[in-house]
Image (cartoon, rainbow, N blue to C red; front, top):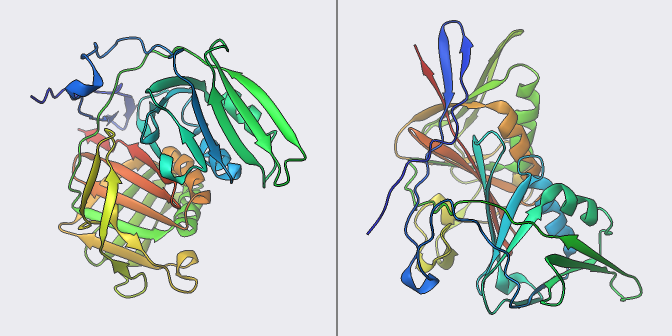
Length: 346
């Protein structure tokens, strides 16, 4: 049985010209499957597991460093949920307007061990300070040990194992509720160069604070209005520049369930880039109906830190549903940002 709750993640009210602007973010909470144990209260305290060891090794530790740098400005604390499938993170920003969803597939690690699910409470400012001690070509080894008290071991090694840096990061007990984001059929899917997306957000942020994104079969429009004036950028739909092929793929939904299905929509599209299309103004759109939404631009600017992870960015839109900005992390997994649209009431 599905228990559905609407989590109104803090309404930010702002009076301006007799209008009240509301930021509303809606998510669904579902009952976990029976094999995952008894249902906990939605506000139950997540305890740190001290029983089973966890370890994961990445030959390219720089990728993990980029991931953390892409979310540290939005998320202060969060729980890494580690199990036999990989590592997951769901965390909201301090104002509860945006949400970060991360998944790292265990098959993409050089070595991965997690026989029993474990929760690692992380302060991302502290983790960032440790990761800054690594060098670009270092490998990364993460592990926990029952003998250590609430600590995550972080080890950096160079290619020849001539240099090894070892750190112990103190873990936290973080009070959080488990959010399960359901699969959603978005009516408008946009794929474009991540560099171009970053340039748009950065440039328009100099003009105003509120951005309107409109998608249709013909193209996508980014419009801004500020104190100094207004402007907009329009990109036409490119049919043949970014070819897409459909194939069978194993996907992991945000609630951790593995599914094998035929790829039918943009959230599962395998993008094959030709030449230098990822750095140009080419845009691929699949749109069932036109959608226009208004967003706080400062959050979208923060999302552009994910451009270091992928040459392409995926935007998913539907009326009255949070925008999804997704970066696929090579073969490792994905990083998704959810942003609530602004609703203007007269």
